[in-house]
Amino acid sequence: MKNITLLYFLIALLSLQCSSPPPAGEPTIQTVLGPTPAEEMGLALIHEHVFLDWSGADSIRPEEWDEEQAFQAILPYLEAAKAKGVNTMLECTPAYLGRYPALLKRLSEASGLYLLTNTGYYGARQNKYIPRRAFEESAEELAARWIKEWENGIEGTGIRPGFIKIGIDSDTVLSPMHEKLVRAAAKTHLATGLTIVAHTGPEAGAYQELKILEGEGAAPDAFVWTHAQEGALEAHTELARRGAWISLDGMGWLNDQNGQVDTAALQKYLEMLKNLRDNGLLHRTLVSHDAGWYTHGEPGGGSFQPFTAIFDTVIPALRENGFTDEDIRQLLLENPREAFSVRVRAIRG
Ligand SMILES: [Zn+2]
Image 1 (cartoon, rainbow, N blue to C red):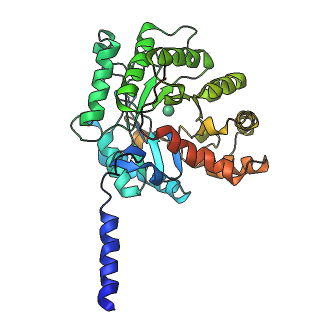
Image 2 (cartoon, protein in one colour; image 1 turned 90 degrees about the horizontal axis):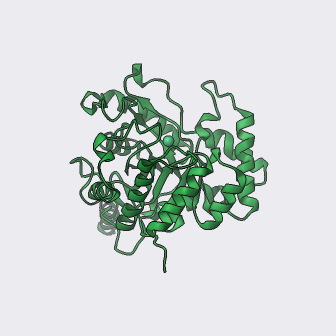
Image 3 (cartoon, rainbow, N blue to C red; image 1 turned 180 degrees about the horizontal axis):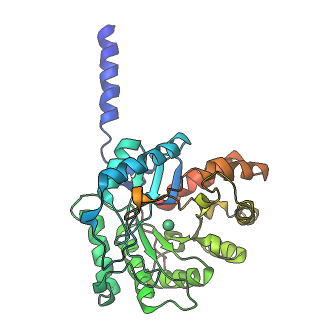
């Protein structure tokens, strides 16, 4: 009897340790620890930052980053998110702006959170974070670089990106550089199945991005309209109806350092979420904090905005406004899993 118990114990232990790649055909997400069944994603924050370096693509010096200091400063905030029930976090800091896969891997192992990093370039803020050679390269050449990171891992770390992150300035007409970034993102998506998270803001940019993506053959549900909280309600419903993901992601800034809630901003988020719910579009809606981040160059990394306002402030307000547990589960669990499971979403035709 005792031996059988021991046997079961050993089997259980073995199955815990064998978190090998999931079987083919099963939906997966790509975390910094490797491919992971999408079923294990759990409650997810889809747009956060742990580390940033604002030096600019020409002057950034990753060799000067203090990994140990950053690790110690960031870890408690990940643990606080974990205590709220968070299981997965997408780290949206792109290359040349402080993307730090090795640090993310350490933080993931220490916190028990799944973390995802990204490939792609951030053109917003007038291209300060775009490496010089990218101006000469074609969309195909940029895509080839990003696809290589998916295939071989990032900068020799072996850590692969879990999504594509680009950034554009949401002007009336996209600059040629930003149009090229969107085109490269579409090509990368079609080659890898990675979802495109596009820092955009107001809807003028989002409409143009979607047109370019569709022109390249990528379906709207491969596209996350990021910072959509800066866009109009009608644009939310229209683009969600077309299949795009609407990302309302600045919620980390609802609470100030003393825990005071910005009630006007909270009301705006509630209005946006009610609009999407009332139009039957909650299944296209994503929420996050866009909070964090340890800033290289500031003493102790500067002041850190926690990843908890959704739980302390937004969810109670949603409940008061008639949102059900099922709605909240959809926003934080089902939609992230659907949006970020790796698969090609091409337009059939
Ligand atoms: Zn962000």
